[in-house]
Structures are given as structure tokens and as C-alpha cells.
Image (cartoon, rainbow, N blue to C red; front, side):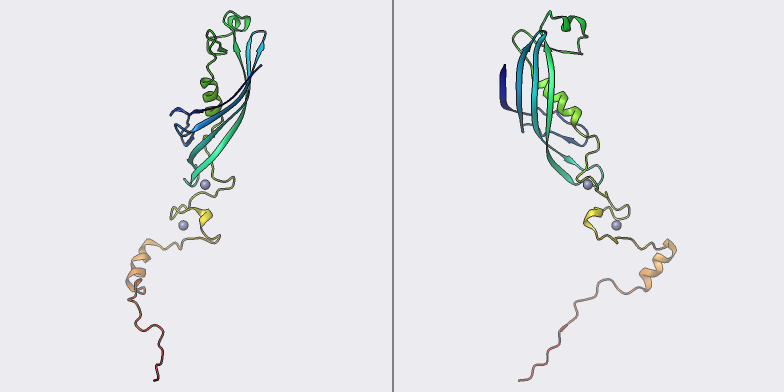
Length: 174
Ligand SMILES: [Zn+2]
Ligand SMILES: [Zn+2]
């Protein structure tokens, strides 16, 4: 049995639409390689940093995924190799056991298609586009009938009042 405890930089295509492993970041492989009848059984854990954005509120997400993997790499000429389709089983090419496709497939399959920043992320306000989680619970928009909106502007109090001079009148008695 052989143990692999190694880090390698992620290529740039380990991603799905909204989340992925940033290219060049360290992916950690902690794997055991065991000789079995038909080939080499690879099992262990793969850890990778992931970044993306929340599917509901677009907030950036930074996380780490840890995956348990177990996969048989078949020997050339083994029964397993002979009885399985080309893309159905991983193969040992000569003495070479390519771990990158295993790591990539495991990670890409585990990436969520709709990642969320928190399980109960409420998303964005449909009216103003702000994160509902950042807003007070009673956040709401006053709905003004378009025909009345003009009047509100016309007769409403001016929104910007010039800085009130002497706002805290102090009586100076010398
Ligand atoms: Zn969110
Ligand atoms: Zn709003």
C-alpha cells in the first residue's frame, strides 16, 4: 500500500456556472493506493478551496470542500478493463496513474449548481435589489400609484433641505 499526501495547483476548468476551484489554488490529496486483483484501488480524501457567488443574493462565497473518493484504476489487460467500456473505468497507463481526472470529476460533480451563502438566504428584494438578510425584517416598499407619484413629487416636502443654520442655538451670555 502506498500513501499520497500531496498538494497540487488546480487547473482553470474545475468549475460549474456559479462556483469553482480558483485556478492555481492548492488542492490537497490524501490518498491510499492499494494493489488489488484487477488494478489499484485509490481511496481517501480530496480537499479544495472553492469560491463563487450565492445563487440567491449574489454575495461572494468562500468555502472548502472535502470529498471522500474511492475508485479502481484497472490494469491493462485485466478482466475489469476487458469487460468495461472505455469511459467507464479508469485505467493504469503503464506505471502511470493519472489522479487529475479523478480529482476533477469528483470535485466538479460535488459542486452545487445553485450555491447559497447560507442555507436560509432570503435572496434579494424584488423592488430595490438589496440583500434581504442585510435589511430590517420589516423592510417594505411603499407602493405609490404611478398617477399619484407625480403629485407626491410636486407637493411633497423637498427631499434635500439646506443645512439648517445654527441648528443648536446656544445662548452666549458673556
Ligand atoms: Zn445569499
Ligand atoms: Zn427593497
